[in-house]
Image 1 (cartoon, helix red, strand yellow):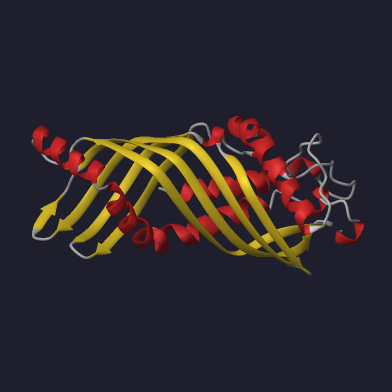
Image 2 (image 1 turned 45 degrees about the horizontal axis):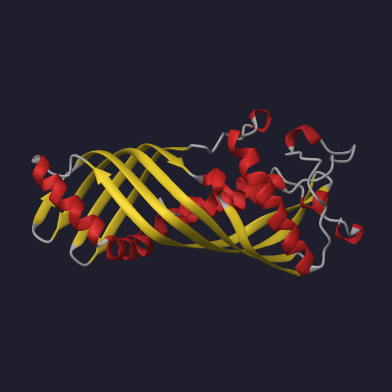
Amino acid sequence: MNYLIGLLCLCLVALGVKAVPAPAQADSSKYFSANDLPKCATDEDQLADCIKEIFNTLTPRLKDGNPKLRIPPYEPLHLNRTSFQYSSGTVNGRITVRNAKIYGFAANTAKEVKIELNGDKVKLNLITFMPKMNIVGSYKADLQVNQLHLKPKGEFNVTLKDVETATRTEGELYKKDGHRFLRLSNIDTAPKIGDLKIKANGIFADPELDELALNVANQYWRDIYGIMLPETRQFWQPLLLRMFNEALELVPIDQFIVDESFN
């Protein structure tokens, strides 16, 4: 679930950096447009500050999406279904999350942005901060914990506070439709959480055992989170990269760069 933090951070940049209308030879109706945004210089320091300003301007503005480009709203962000496989020490099995709603992205802000340009090669590092994130939905699991076989099923409500996310990407510029676009070759997201509170039902048939399990989980959430994040990375990392590149196809990079030699 935590990969969504980093995903949305860069998607907002990807969907929001267009600052001027597309030229006549291109079909501007298929690209995101925001004419009041700044147009950035190619100097790396100035470009980083410019991207940071664009990010912090667009984060609240894009919360309702863009129907013309079929960009869905993200406050809340809907997650229909996703599954994670665990195999770590005493815990093995799969957890599936359905019909999840994620709140809090509208308050997300960029703290630091670093960018490196080397010809057509691009590296972007982004650190963002979200005061509070709330995730609600349903779950179903099939787990083996030591000698205990569990098949819990129910509803959950998870609240995360002080979420700081470091996202690192690498990509390459390419030409299409009279414009230059960015395609990412890899992405790595590392979220840090100040506090976490878990509520859920259906873990055990006995509600009292449910409460006991939740008390333990909330007491030792840092240990649980430290195990879950690397274990699930192999499942959400390819999905993250694919979704990013789909978003970046809507954004002509040359439309928010001042230097004409970039075009």
